[in-house]
Length: 235
Ligand SMILES: NC(=O)c1ccc[n+]([C@@H]2O[C@H](COP(=O)([O-])OP(=O)(O)OC[C@H]3O[C@@H](n4cnc5c(N)ncnc54)[C@H](OP(=O)(O)O)[C@@H]3O)[C@@H](O)[C@H]2O)c1
Image: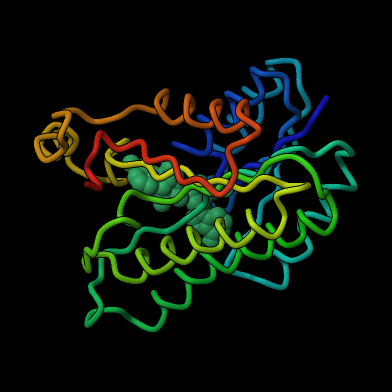
C-alpha cells in the first residue's frame, strides 16, 4: 500500500485530504501540531478505512526538527508516494503592521517548512507527487495578509522550480483555493457574504479541493501547475 504524508492533516482542509487519501487506500502519515483530540479522531477515522495511519505531532516552525521528519516517517512507512503540504498560518497584518514574530513564524511554517520537506522528499523518496496548498491570493496584490501572501507566492515559485528540477522523478504541483472554509472563529454568515465577490457567486467546498487533488494525482503530464479552485476570484 502506498503512503501519503499530509501536513496540517488533523483538521479542515488537510483532514479532508488525508481522509480522502485513506479512502483511496493510502496509508497516512498525518502531521499536526496543536489539534490534540481532533488529531486523534482523524487518525481513528483514517484507520477505520482499513489503512495504517500514524500521527506525528510537530511544530513545523522548528526547522531543525522539520528537516528530520521525512527520515522519521520512512522508518515507519516504506512506500511513500505523495506529500501534501497544507499546514499554514493566516495572520491579518498588512506590510506596515507586520510584527517580527508574524514574519518569522509565517515564513518558517508556510514556506521554509514545505521547502525542507520537499527537499528531503526528493533526496529520500525520489518518486511520486508533491502537492503544495497555496491560495488564490498568489495571483493578486492584496496587502491585508502580507507575510502570508509573501509565503504563498514564494511557495508557488518553489513549486515551479522543483517541478523543473525534479520532473523526471517527482512531479510538483500546487492547488490555489479560494473561498472554501471561513477563517477559524469567523462569523456564521462569512461564506455567504464573501461569496458575493466571487464571479460564480458561490463558495467552494472541501469536495472541490479533493477533485483537484485527484486530478493532479491522475494526470501524470501535469507538472509545475497551480490549479486555481476559486470560482474565478483571482481574476
Ligand atoms: N480555508 C480556506 O478557504 C483556504 C483558502 C485559501 C487557502 N487555504 C490554504 O489551505 C490550507 C489549509 O487551510 P485551512 O483553512 O484548513 O487551515 P487551518 O484551519 O488554518 O489549519 C491550519 C493547519 O496548519 C497546522 N499548523 C498551524 N501551525 C502549525 C505549526 N506551527 N506546526 C505544524 N502545523 C501547524 C494546523 O495544525 P494544528 O491545528 O494541529 O495546530 C492546522 O492543521 C492552508 O495552506 C491555507 O493557506 C485555505
